[in-house]
Image (cartoon, rainbow, N blue to C red; front, side):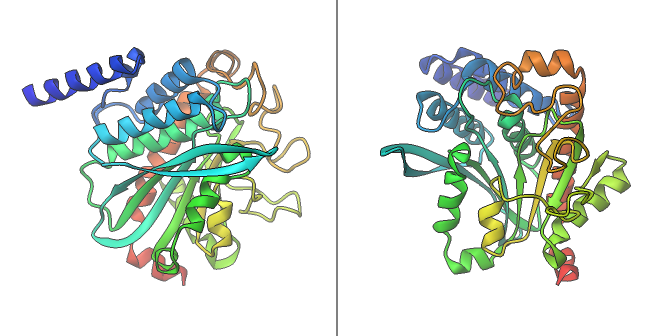
Length: 325
C-alpha cells in the first residue's frame, strides 16, 4: 500500500510539472470498477484537458504524452514511433504510441485507436471513446496471461488520411506482418444509435464472427452491418479508418464502431436518427452535447465495448485462428 501511494504521489507531481493537474483523475482504478467506468474517466480528461487535437498541434502532442503516461503507469513501458507527412506543402509531425502486453507466444494481436481530431471539436466520440476503451482494456489486462502478445497502438494523424496507421504498417517487416494474428480497430464508439463490429470478407472475417459470438453469449447488444447497401456487403465496412492499412496488408481485422446503417445514405455515415452525424461536428462531438442529447448512451457503449474487447482478445488463441483457416 505504501509503495502504491508513493507511486501515485510521484505520478501526481509529474503531472503538476507538466501543468496538467487534472490528469490525476486518470489514476489506476481497480478491476472491481464497473465496466466502462475507467474508459469514461479517460474520456472526460481527453475532452476537458485537451479537446481539439489536430495532427501536428501542441494539443495532439500533449495527448500523446497523456496516453504514454497512462501506459507507463500501468507498467507497459511504452515507446514512441515518430513520423511526418506533407499537407499543403507543409511538413506535419505526429507520432504513434506503442505498448506491449507479452503473451505466451510472440504472435501479436494489435489493438488500435487514433487520438487526433478534426478542427474545433472535443473529439469525445471521434475518437476519445476509442482511446478510452483501449486504455481501460489495457488496465484490465495488466495481470492477465493472454495466449498471444497484445500490442496497443494509439495512432496519430488518422484524420489526415490514416497517416499513423499507414506509417505503422509501412514499417512492419514481412515477418512481423505474418506474425500478426489480428488487428482490432476502435473508432467512434460513444454516440451512434447502434453498436457494431465489422470484419473482412470470407475467411478474413473470423475476428468479427468471434466477437459476434461472444456478444450473443454475453447478451451484449452488438451487431454488424446488415448489408442493405450493396456497396458495403454484410459484415464489412469502408476503408475510412485505421483498420484499412492492416486489411490491405492481408491482416484479419475487427472494427468496433457506433453508428446507424439503416438511415441516411445507408453507408454508416449518418450516426443517429435524432441528430444525424456527431463526428466532425463542432458543437455535437462534445461531452455536454452527447450526455444531454443521449443520456446514458456513452456509459452503456463504453461498458459494452470494453467487456467485448477484453473477452475477445483473451478468446483469440491457436484454436480459434486454426478454425478460421
